[in-house]
Length: 104
Image (cartoon, rainbow, N blue to C red; front, side, top):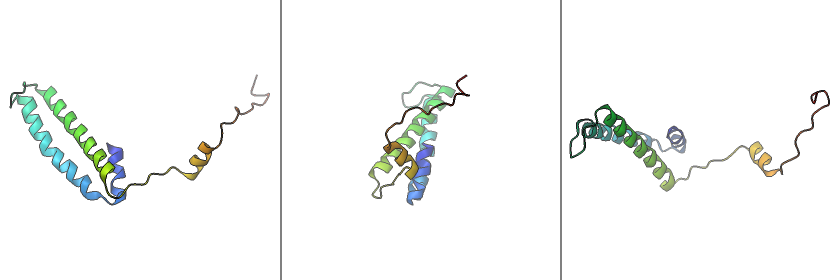
């Protein structure tokens, strides 16, 4: 998720980086209330409910950023360095030869 948080602002899409966490906090609050104390027909899970609520909200945040990055109008171009592309384009060569001093 942090990688997505770092990838969106360089694309000048800072609003989504603000909106998603601002929506996640109240959702986490409601899910904590439901899962810790057992409201709306859910069992009271105590501190385990807090962990479940936080995990649910974190996954939803991740999916929100991923979905946004997939449907955003301006595609974020990701490229590898020129040297990496050049190395990947070359066929694999034989293992480097060892000198006789190193083979003993």
